[in-house]
Length: 473
Ligand SMILES: C[S@@+](CC[C@H](N)C(=O)[O-])C[C@H]1O[C@@H](n2cnc3c(N)ncnc32)[C@H](O)[C@@H]1O
Image (tube, rainbow, N blue to C red; front, top):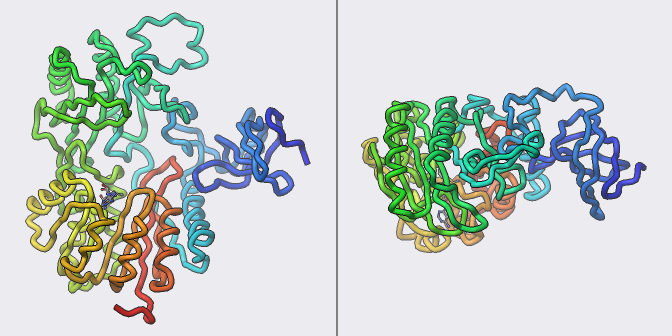
């Protein structure tokens, strides 16, 4: 066995992609996680970390190429923290995503026998995102070839995405292939304009500076674009944002609304404490089939619009509704799943933590003239205890955040015992943990992975659980 010690160069044959995205090679059975490698490649790699059970390595040179390698389209690939799988053929990405669902169900839920359907591909591989969040910085990340040059303040001004693994370093992005070309043109224009404004970008070290985040949201069906600029509070600087807003309005007619929010908190989140609408209604309208959705700056909406449409269609198909069901849509966000299936069922009650999202859900219900849905705001771990006041559901749909359901929610479901539970998740590991809690009272009927995030290791997965005949209410 070649010596695996930190700092050593070693030749590795890359075998697979592990859950989380890293490539895996083995040396006499010892696992080496390799950053930025493609299964099938033979690489010369540098061991960067050695632990008792595994090591980590970085590719120095590709010795033989993999048939699954593909040239990345993006010039920022490898530096930007965005799409770590862009050099892996899309079919291969799909293969490994499905394999990770199988692995999680087997190892975490002990449900190795569950049949996992072929993964549904994203309708678009590039330009699929309807929302991108960019960060301003006063010290842009310099590429190797730029390190010796002198730069003035204006040319160190950055607006882009974080460097892989370094959340305080921002790379200027010219074109991001996850969003539309028009959104990239807006990004470049905002950067150029803000750099010339004389106002500095916000520094996360000194907490001084003005420009903080740019969020671009785009409705794929209507073409409407929402721009959300987040700055620190400085009323004397507002006129700069007003002028930028006028400029964008005249240059980009598809920008139908622009919102300026203030964030004076230290935490780096693209959310404002107070907002003003500079023009337009403050939201954009997206359509999924016949349904219309109003999307405002802080509302959650699946980031891959065409993929979301497939996801909701698939939820409806797997749930096998016959029109009589009373459905709960838990962790409902702006109500999109509930509203999408409303015409297939008797009634829907959605529950969601964020008041604004519930407001949007009710508004979406109203503009679509849907009469059988209602939405409640609150923390599910508390709300679920008051469930008897809402009545008994036949079907419960859960779509929790990445961490999965709160154990209280899972325990309550085991008391409520709806006929079916449809679990939707963007994290197969937490989905499998939730499944482990439900198995016994429930059997897994279907597992359907669906890719909403091409070129990243992420995916969505739907699991239908049917009440075990031995369980009773
Ligand atoms: C993955 S999103 C699902 C959104 C929605 N189902 C959709 O498809 O658009 C998860 C949602 O859970 C909400 N959430 C997070 N923690 C919660 C809690 N403790 N109680 C209720 N809702 C919560 C989040 O605000 C978010 O809207």
